[in-house]
Image (cartoon, rainbow, N blue to C red):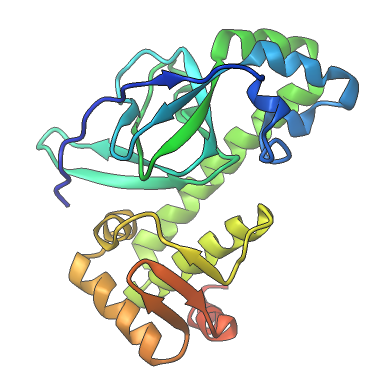
Length: 247
């Protein structure tokens, strides 16, 4: 699916206080690995918070990886491209989730990361992170878990694209997004889709028209209520039944 080119970010660094001191997402991010008496080490790891406008690029594929990023506010998408110019979205990121982990072994970013809305991300210096992790086994374990979870999600996404029908893909997408919001103390049933239907289609391997048709079908069947990008899940069991044979 063809995607429009996007501008590189004009990054605005935010002043103190330190991001971790005021971040309600810290229980999902790297600090979750640290005991209370070592939380001050996050001041070495989390160096700045950067602000991006909608559509701006945080980093791009092939760029040397010196930092990974944690979503502080807003949301992002990860995009990969092919030599013939085609691009596909391979992930969406909500607050508390890390971006750039795929490049840990090669020290090169494997995707482009772009803001879906006006957003903020915390910079994590990779070299400082590694040095600190050598001293703090709990942090090292957390990094391994995050990378492992990212690989598991990539495998699940491959399964979705390779074996699921279109309605199953969309149902899984909505339920997965719901669970991620629930984990962050937000409503799991009523939320705004920060991504367009075209972007959802790119991620799920579906055409824009297919996503729009399925959204309408889900609405008419009473599974969800849809008003532009506002979504309310009204029959969670019904959505889950669409995936019943996946197990």
